[in-house]
Image (cartoon, rainbow, N blue to C red; front, side):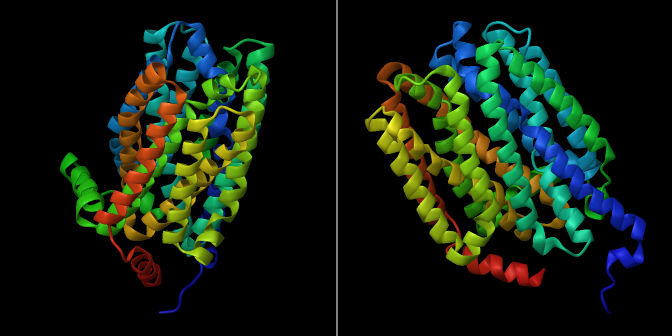
Length: 415
């Protein structure tokens, strides 16, 4: 039977689906608003009596909340709709950033982190799954990698701008003002996603919606399918090492003698590197191959962390740009491959399982990293992050599927 484009079958539906893509673009430009607070947040916490160990405990709490909420949130997105998940996530992020404008002390910061983590859990996977399902209903799912890469690139570029502005806001106004502006942006995010429509796969409900089905999806992608297991373990190893080291950057900048307002400038420049890489990562992967990219990223990330562990110098700060290559890879390439390897009705749940494992490995690393930083210095903490990356990726290949690239190619052809 000949394929009939959806725009010929139902022009109104086609226009609504096209609008989905533009709305997702807009929402993803609002999503990195929290970056306004990032350049000065460690200083903000420090001004309220927190040391690096407490900073890492706070972020570990954040990660654990996301671990607890990530998979159920993705599951709810699959069975109640991606749109509702995005609305709830935006509202929760708005509440969390607003609370930071009045919170003071570790215990009150925990409340803010709870709201923010819950909001991110609701959004995680839902936006990617809705875009993929929108393109699939249009018969254009093969363009997902390009479009999601472009969206991710713009999102990171906007985040870079937010980092740049946030450093000056925190320095010139107060360390609470970045949170206020972030809350306004998340309020706008919540309104914008109200205009989304559910794609066919997102709107369908499973015949058995229960916790056992949720556990079954996790079991499939982590235990029964070696291809998805390899992807998820690689992503977790790279994510935990790069993200844990991120919280060491501001103390490292301070050791290098960098002024506080310049934190935003440096972090913005690093984010722009990730933005450019996101735009091109799909093409690079097609040309070079998945395994080569993983090997290169592992060497670059491990080498960078070893280098900064040995010396504190402003001349080494550009080396952190290599960690942004990891960020681009995780956002685009891994998501694309996972989408092709899982049941279409379980995409949001499967992506959330991946994110859950990433956050779990990250939360496990954070507390010893903070303790090591306080006891032995930043260099020892960077060494711990480097070891996590190298050992983790090596183990992922040992327990994974050696024929991952060929397997994914065959799956794409089948689709």
